[in-house]
Length: 86
Image 1 (cartoon, rainbow, N blue to C red):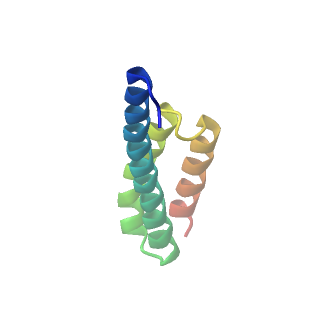
Image 2 (cartoon, one colour):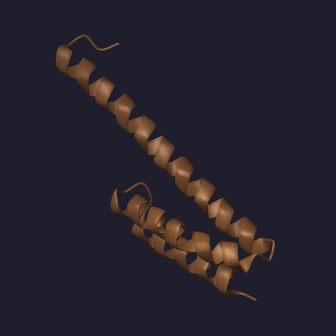
């Protein structure tokens, strides 16, 4: 445990940030799975409807450095290909 007040505050901030980061990462992964499962099941209407939300979450994650921008581009490309495949 930290002893100084500033160190205690920094620990509180880190825990709060960690919780937010974890929640947003979990939301992103869940959305990616929704799109992939819908596309895999042949439900292209649902997959196409969920794709923009997934792309938005990917862009937000890349903007805040939760994922690398190249990974974001790769994920978006693969999801789009998956949804457009017939």
